[in-house]
Length: 145
Image (cartoon, one colour):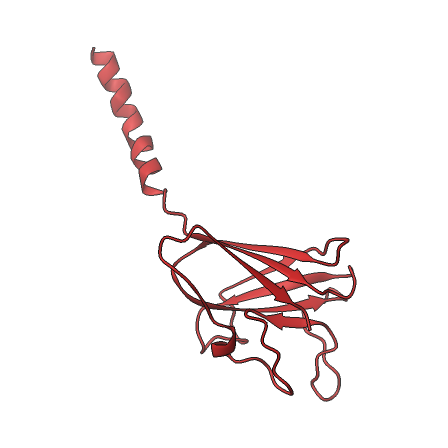
C-alpha cells in the first residue's frame, strides 16, 4: 500500500502539468492563391493592432509554394482578438518586398479580407478579422494581386 501511495505521489506533478497545458489557443490556417509562379517563398506577417500594421509583425512565417501555385501557412496558439495579415510573394527569396523607383511593388502581395486599394497600401481596418473566444480553427483565403 505504501508503495502504491509513493508511486501516485511521484506521478502527481506530471498529471497536474498535463491539466495546465490544455489551452493551446486557436489555429489560423491560410491558403494563398493566384501566385504567378513557384519561385521563391511566400512571406506571411500577422499583426495585432493598427499601430503595428505593416511595421512590426507579431509573427511572420515563410512558406513554400506548391506546383499548383498556392501556398499554405499556419499560425498556432492565437488568443481571441483582432488581427490583420499582410502577404507577399518573395520571388527572389531576399526577404524584402521589391519595388520600382516609384515605390510600386514588383512582387505579388495581398492582405486579409482581400481589399484592393488603388495607389496605396491597405489600411488595418480593411484587413482586420476577429478570432472569437473558444475558436479551434479559422481558415482564410488570400488572393495575390
